[in-house]
Image (cartoon, rainbow, N blue to C red; front, side, top):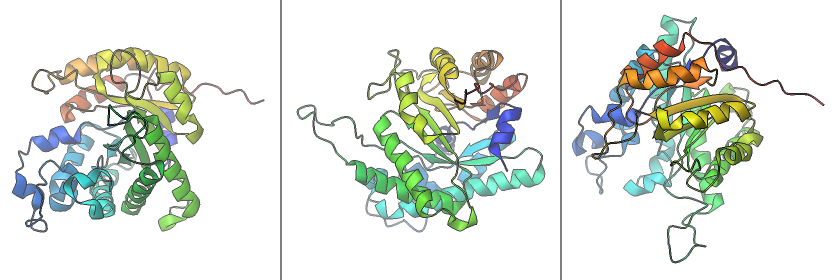
Length: 340
């Protein structure tokens, strides 16, 4: 399956929030633990990635709901599946296994739908989150030069994650929710280095395409580490990504000007998956599916989109409404690059 061929035909739909859908199951500590981790020495409730091992039927079922809603790309349940992030639960040793298990959940769901309708291929994107430690900022206000992690440590963590995602059978590697471009650079380096070392891993025979998605954190139009959108794009363009886009932090209404800007500067495909509006006082999202879809329809009409979906607070209903609206419009055309 060639995702570029599909991107040249139409706007592709990426799925919505995994966490939002997991919350609907109202799982308790025992559900997260399962039989295997019933005696684990720390609380694990909230470690959503662990559910790919202890409750795989729930994760696979969520993937299927998004596929049924019209998603062409589903993300693995691996946002925190690194030895750095899993240290919060003292589960560093499970990082590789979590990635394999999550990739297989998504792969099973995608293959089921590909078998049903081979004319509309579905793709699995291995989700590589931003980490809970940053390379650009100090966690200690009294020591601006301090860093809680080194570049090499981040590369090691991401390399293990990439190996697990490839083993589990993903089609794409998605470096997402980037608030610190230096963390993203470590992920990019890890990806490139992995495929230099294992160019024929598992018989796949080629480096997997990379999707990159940053996060504009507020009205300043900058990432948390201080970059403008254009600077962020310039910083990652060397990776020759399949797509560059934005996700999380903002609702569609607030993300609009940034997507317009990105569509005008990106030499690759563009992606966008905003939150369902901004969170209310209780941290919940109130924007209804038709509201999100109405805003995003304008983006498609203006020719700004290649890949679109939802982030925090979005559901299969949001994805269905978005898919129904954007299918009326052609995908954004890649700019012509002059060869000198």
